[in-house]
Length: 387
Ligand code: ADP
Ligand code: MG
Image 1 (tube, rainbow, N blue to C red):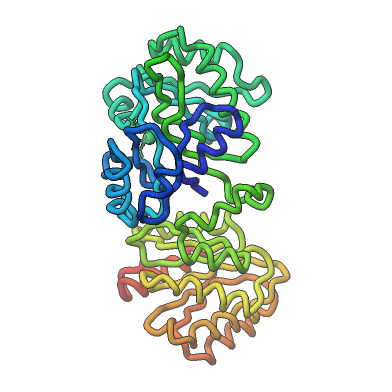
Image 2: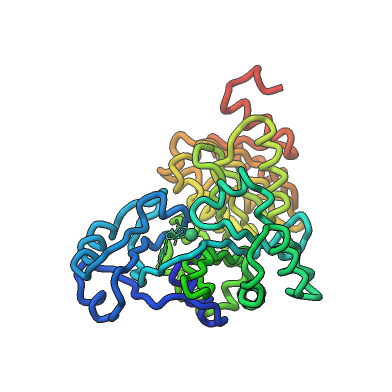
């Protein structure tokens, strides 16, 4: 789950990382802005779960409360890279001497938290990465040792950062690191980590990405969920304990399985064959007819999906249940014109085949994943091209 800037900053504040005071606006008018008693000029920032807002017109400056209210009116509801700005954050404008970058992410390569630091941050950090990679340091943090002095020293030396800010930077990275662990995050980022004209480091922007699996332990963060723009199928699936994963917008295949490893194998093989996955759904355990039918219904909630592939590998899972679920789902109006490929292993496999055959619905039963992938390919591109 990606937090909005003001939510990320609330966590920064909790851990003692300096942020600015500000006010969140969700309706036009200037009362809230005036009541917040901010020093002008101010910055108005669209609260959307994506970066690059500055370049997309989502960060504007206002000299007076009137101008701020007018800009808020214009910015509420604006679209920024596919996200709607339902809320705005109004904060005081800082005089900035330098914009740095600092983040900690979970790095799958080193299998450890990774500090990424640059004294050339701000909106053009991607440009810095391309043109002056030497000014960006990536330093793994040993989870046993934590943020030791040498981590900071190395990051600053390597990038030519001004060492007079060493202690401040060290303090901030330590706090970020605690937040990174306590909140089960995949990423915490401050960009810009600004140095103001008084030489103080302050987080002017914030990104926090939390592992969804940890949300049950994080009541404060779960409460923010309503404010976030989430995919309707992801929400629907979560309510009934399925995991729905949008994959590629221009894909047309929906894959379902009982377990993420199997899902990924299916996705790999289908993709290898040059086809595109639109979404994946992890059924978890216990494949009853009702759950299968419900999962197919959720998947078909995506107009882009023309073919659904269900791959169930279960020891004691009853294949007849799976088949019955598939038949229920494919009789529904939303399934008209769609195809379903069914691969199942488990008890009562033969009976399952009979149920499908008798239904006379566009359901293909296939043996094993490679054959299933061939079947999907033939359905899409016709006979003869499948081999
Ligand atoms: P994004 O990363 O989504 O583009 P930021 O919050 O980083 O949005 O803002 C973009 C740029 O706007 C920053 O790099 C900074 O130069 C400027 N900016 C943002 N907040 C402030 C602020 N409070 N005071 C002064 N400048 C700001
Ligand atoms: Mg930013």
